[in-house]
Amino acid sequence: MKQQIIVSGLGGQGALTLTRLLAEAAFAAHFPVLTSETHGMAQRGGTVISMIKVGPFRGPLILAGAADVGLFLTLKNLAVHGFYLKPDAARFVNSDTPGDYWHLDARTMAQQLGAPVVANLILLGYAVGQGALFCDPQLMEKVITDKSPARFRESNFRAFGAGVEAARRANP
Image (tube, rainbow, N blue to C red):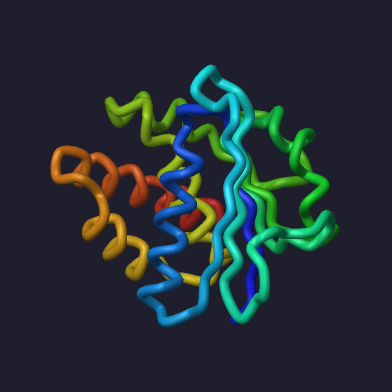
């Protein structure tokens, strides 16, 4: 297993949470994993990017044009960090705007669940449900259950499940 993943968003959207969950899932699956993150002005809504390398890699940084999967928590970050992706990479974007990527309006779905901050987990569920990532839904559900603080566990679990279900509906 070798997979290079980028997660791109704005401060407060949960990019670093996704990074931690993906790293924990890789660890639970007994895959080597490396992560790197840049979040300088994230506290003020600035751009955040993190990189996850699953498999036998030597360093944590992903070169331009080398990522297999991109999770974009906002459409505008696709233009900012899309250059990290391979031409045939799977692109998952939190957006209601169709394009040459998988799109899902995770923000609206999160609001409908009564938890606007879980759009990141909905997008993660969508990507996992599409089979684009190294893990299956069951492994990620276990990681979410084990690693979420008790007060957020149920909403996180529901959000991830909503994303997986959206992927199932997209691929009947």
